[in-house]
Length: 74
Image (tube, rainbow, N blue to C red; front, side, top):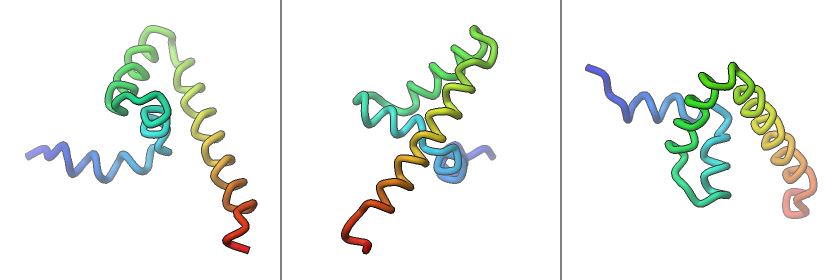
């Protein structure tokens, strides 16, 4: 049968963690943010997906820069 928790553990980390990141920063559940992305995508015809990809790119760049600047790793 369909096990939602198993699917979530496999898929969630691979979707860039954008919803989790935004949820932590805004203090709301990441599942609510995912639902809003889905609803807005149907209404606004794919533009939220572009925003999502931009945020994912920005988070990855920020993490990369923080790893390079971290003096503890030098």
